Length: 75
Image (tube, helix red, strand yellow):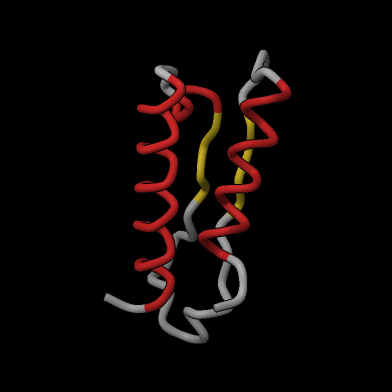
């Protein structure tokens, strides 16, 4: 598994554990848009696009953004 997919897995794990703590399915409020091609060139620097659904509470938006930056930030 390359660096991009490790980071994507880390983000999913962070969202899942945070959702469990808050007893709220945070994954219902956002979508991660992946590229149409495999990430092979510079996988450590690639970041997918994160979009939030309409009606997403501001607190959830902020928390998901923090988790996203934690997972895809510089190592």
